[in-house]
Image (tube, rainbow, N blue to C red):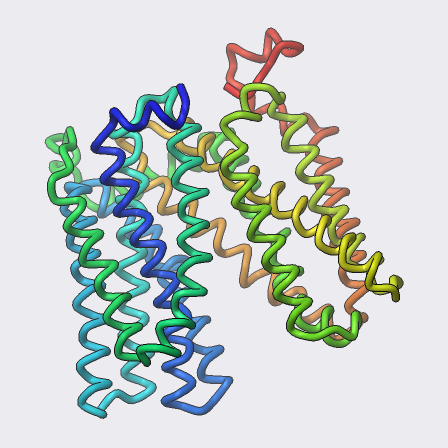
Length: 421
């Protein structure tokens, strides 16, 4: 199995194109709405509020949406959610053209857009295993993760260009077009969906079964906790990056861009390398190595404050950011594949809805802790403490044997030959 084999899977190809357009639209949407809300309000606080509001549906609504989506035709859900987002963006454009758009209106509409995405995400996860064989999960997920990352990077750059060249109007039109075309690509998709037994169940029963399955599945619960840990590992760097560069390194925006480019490039590379490395690296060793690299990255960030010469500073910062990105990209793809394999197909939407919400909850929780700690200690000390903490967590997971629990039962007997299957 390799990337070229997917040329024969036209259904997956259409689904992939739709997914990538969604990621592009989401990325353009984030920057455009951020710019627009600041343009309307003139307040950085309102802009920050808008970003926080966008997290609420993913954390609060998505677990409930997953159970509902499980009982519905996933194809119809995908189409309706994309069309809904298209109409909402066009509504923003119409209100803006009519010069009646107010900040509170934009906040409400962006919340609605994020809510539709909270329904679309479980449907996406429910469709994927119906388009791929189990042995294709690694390559399929790698293409989604890597391609999605490319679209996010492209969308961030494209949004700025669109706003500069075409104004808010042009950016909103491109944003809306992405969602419309994504819906049209799903229309001819052929899916085999068994809904008879699920339709007879109540929503409450479907949700309860999803929660029970997650609670009783030690392997799935461990995977979700690892995903939360991955998000927690990213949060201190994201929260402290600007202060680190400006106040500690005494550098400008070009250094921030340099770090972001290296990190994003590494995440992209890690996602695409996953299917090749997964066949050659034992699961516990791969997770342990990535955890060590992630913890070590924070120690390097703190250490870079002691480097005064740019000839050493930038290569060390760039290489460490690249390696950190590769580790994050690899882990993100690996955990997504293992979660997909751990969930029966008829539980996919509700379980991924719950899992995504729990994983995302680690972001605001960690942000709050970092914010509180930053008032008491300096940034380098906080980064050092974060790195040591992550290294200790990985050591505990290894010594306690938790990482070995991720191995398939039939692989634990042949431990020495175990590869990531």
